[in-house]
Image 1 (spheres, rainbow, N blue to C red):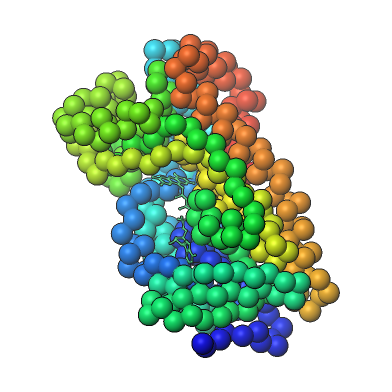
Image 2 (image 1 turned 30 degrees about the vertical axis):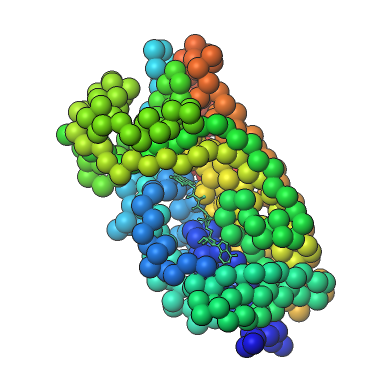
Length: 396
Ligand SMILES: Cc1cc2nc3c(=O)[nH]c(=O)nc-3n(C[C@H](O)[C@H](O)[C@H](O)COP(=O)(O)OP(=O)(O)OC[C@H]3O[C@@H](n4cnc5c(N)ncnc54)[C@H](O)[C@@H]3O)c2cc1C
């Protein structure tokens, strides 16, 4: 059994369990603090690059990346959202946000999750004190007042030990490790699926994103590439097999009808797959030296595209705290964890409640008449528009 045991170094030793988007983002934001960082991910890196879904990053979240990485990581790999149009089927209400009226360069960025992960890996490769342990599965975590000990297995099934000052648990939705430490997650099933895929139109998208509340769900189109969109169609879970089995021509016809040809004629739609939708929430700080982050802490409904943006804000707050507290200070880790909890609690709760409300309101058929009315009202109230826009920009 070989060990990465505790050093007497003055910098922190941090383990990040899970090398998904959250784990990689945490490592990249914490790297400037000179902490010795170990990311344990049970997948080989190449497999993670095969992920096809896109992320809509708010302007606030992308500013966090620019701050910590000191570079414009996304210029080459993202599409800028300049305008968002929200409408309700069968209603006159419409809410429009534009980057120019809000005085920002863009409202958000759409980028492939795998391109983001690749860019983060390239950044991390420049930090000698950051170690990416791929194909490595964390089996147990033992958190004591003096430190955290992790036992993990490598690809050849060797058992190893790692001792650190802090463990960030970013092992994804339902977080098995949080459960192992004796902390449950609260789950709310929406009994819905997101049918996700790519489509393309005859017209250029001009950076416009669309969100449309339908009688029985919602449809979002995110501009991507030159003429492409990523669509997210929220449907009742019982209808999922029918949506997946639907002939491409029929599905195309449906998309065009629902969008009312606002985006021009949609001519192709492919790579359709389904994601089951639920909200899962875990306590933030567990077992005195462990912090739960990313989807493991809060997995949200995708309708407002806030899930990962919220996680990026969390990582930003944590990294800022690490800059301010030196390891040599008495009880520094506990102070960081307490301060973190205090800082994030209010905005996390606000975003989680708002996304949940939107998910319920936006996808219930019986609320259909109110959606249009609500949008008409919001359209007439600049102050309400402004607060929604501020929130969507990721300024929590
Ligand atoms: C279709 C789709 C569209 C989305 N769109 C958006 C969007 O527009 N905007 C947005 O903000 N969010 C969006 N999201 C959510 C977003 O993708 C996630 O919030 C984001 O990927 C962060 O995930 P994570 O890193 O916390 O968890 P995960 O991606 O689940 O990563 C967890 C990692 O931990 C590893 N792991 C698990 N257990 C262990 C263990 N014991 N040891 C070692 N490694 C382990 C896993 O292999 C995995 O690599 C979308 C999600 C989906 C599915």
